[in-house]
Length: 166
Image 1: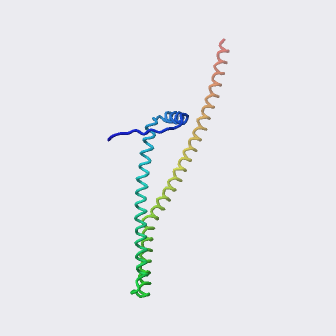
Image 2: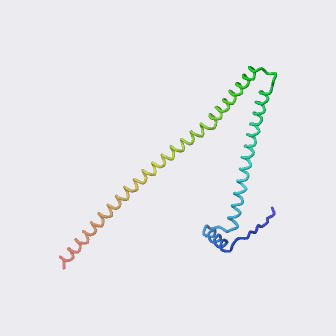
């Protein structure tokens, strides 16, 4: 793979500020720009895939419109047959919509609801741990105060004993 360089012109102040920020993040300017290029190219791939999906959908819609137009333009088909065909087509579309809802939308909603419940459970656990830590901190503070008080009393007792021995 051959490598080529890219050069750009920017103000010296901007270059210096950019270089300082990049160094603070532990990178080099080249590494950061290469990463940006890779991310940009990845975005283009995703965009092209989405564009292709959109193009496929538009083609399907155009085909459906053409079929509907053929149904309406066909003079040999009686009004009753056209109505039946249209009704059958509407039923087909409703079935496809129901399938889409069942296969895609409902599972996504269920997954989202599960994520919300998991998030709430984690939040409650974090709150519980925080409460326990606060209780533990209070208990440690209480023990420290008692120890200081007992040490003070012990020091006074030792001083009194030393005075009495003198």
